[in-house]
Length: 134
Image 1 (tube, rainbow, N blue to C red):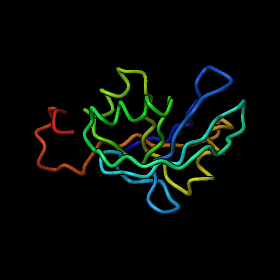
Image 2 (image 1 turned 180 degrees about the vertical axis):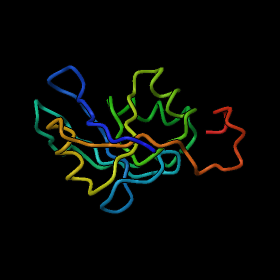
Image 3 (image 1 turned 90 degrees about the horizontal axis):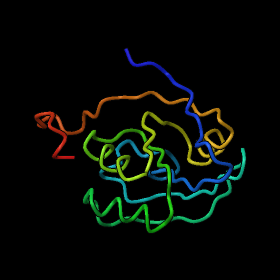
């Protein structure tokens, strides 16, 4: 059974974060998501900044994409371990297990009230578990 966890915001007063989404709701998988709503967190408030798209879904490019836009944290439904490790190793925090509407999720995260569940990636059932495929 997977537990629910309240997601702490970063230790700074200001942070740029993105919510991966499909339509108005959080995207179920980071590796196939192209739409991101970017917010600036100022204290406990989330201010919408811009909508961006990432048409290059390769993990290495995803890191460059987030860095180019100054994104420090990404909120998403789920992501493979390999991509999470690569992003986090390079300073981009990935918060998995997020569900709901984009605006609600952004406000809850900024206020320190976002509840998420950490789930293993099941999108790539053929994966041998090495983490190299995603």
